[in-house]
Image (cartoon, rainbow, N blue to C red; front, side, top):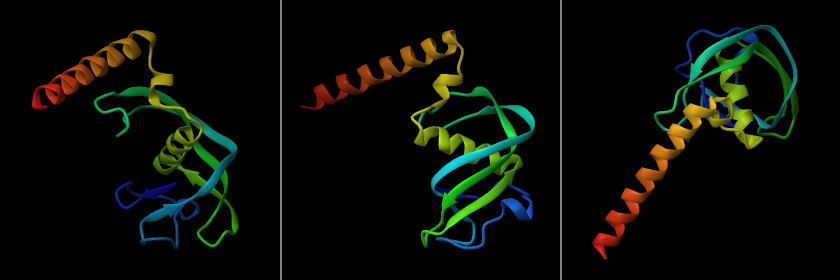
Length: 130
């Protein structure tokens, strides 16, 4: 996972990153959440993979993650607050989980119907260009 943490606001020394591709890049190779603690926080999340879908997700605000860095070294690092939310969201992707898992049955159905209609329109417009 490579996360641009340049715009996530304040974070603690435990959730900062001092290397990688850019000053604000957080690089986690094969991350595993070892521990969750703190209060679970529920917040609306969005995702570039599922545009215009917002879902309330409950996530821990304090996690301990084991991962490898760019040099292959194993690191255990604690992430708190918004950075912890981002890391959990991205680890979900690695495990094949999207926001649709957290959506209500109705919201999931409405979203999938909307995407199906959009796909049909795209196919129709592509067929018209041929």
